[in-house]
Structure formats: structure tokens, C-alpha cells
Length: 143
Image (cartoon, rainbow, N blue to C red; front, side):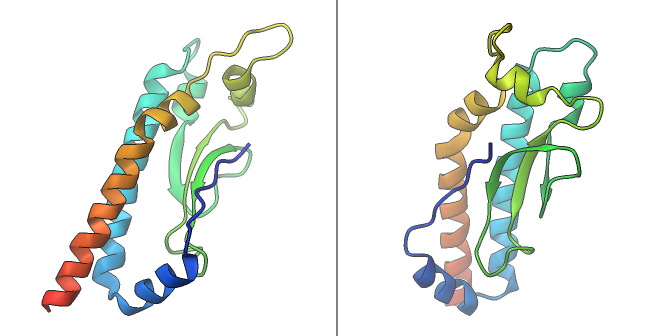
């Protein structure tokens, strides 16, 4: 189950992003990286640990998640899909049970670790990205 952020007024945002230089995209990338680090860190602290395989499999990457990983969250910008797409994931060949822990099964109650982390950090992440866009726009306007 992937979580996608829907951007209202995407065409208008795209026009603005096209006008901004690479410096602005770098500011946004830094904000996304910081937010992803916070979400991943909290998820790693919340996940139940047996051998540590699942905890160690939680991470984020630019672009697509590694093969075999369950995509937990994704923020993508439409036309720059490879450039500003960040994916938070969990699970691999050793921790294939990531989804079962998060959502539970008929025989096991859920022990959510990702969505509580995501919900706790969502507003902060959005604010950080907005501030980075404002900072970049001010840099572009002042230069």
C-alpha cells in the first residue's frame, strides 16, 4: 500500500518550478531528505525488534524502492519523476513480513510502525518543504 501526496494546482507549481534554477531544487531536495530521515528514524524506533532485520530494512531512496521492498510512502513531482521522487520503504528478502507487522493478520494483531511515524511527521515535513520553496524563491528573486 503506497501513500501518495496529491498536489492541488500541479500545473501552476510546474510552471514555477521550471522558472527556478537548480539551486531551488537543491533546497527542496534537502528538505525532503531531512523529512524522510525523520520519518524513517521514528519508524525504526517504533518497529518491534526480534532479530533487527525489519528495522534495518526501513529506509528511503530517490526514485524507486529497492527490489523486494514494500513501498510505504512516496512523494513525486510529475515531470521530474526521477529528480524529485523520494520513496520510503520497508522490507527485503530477509524482512518480507513488513506488511504483516504493520497491518496485522487474522492470527496476529497489527503493530503499526510506519503510519504512526508518517502521521506524526507529516505536517512538519510539509512545512519544511514549503519553507524551502519560499527560501529558494527569495534567493531567485534577490539574484
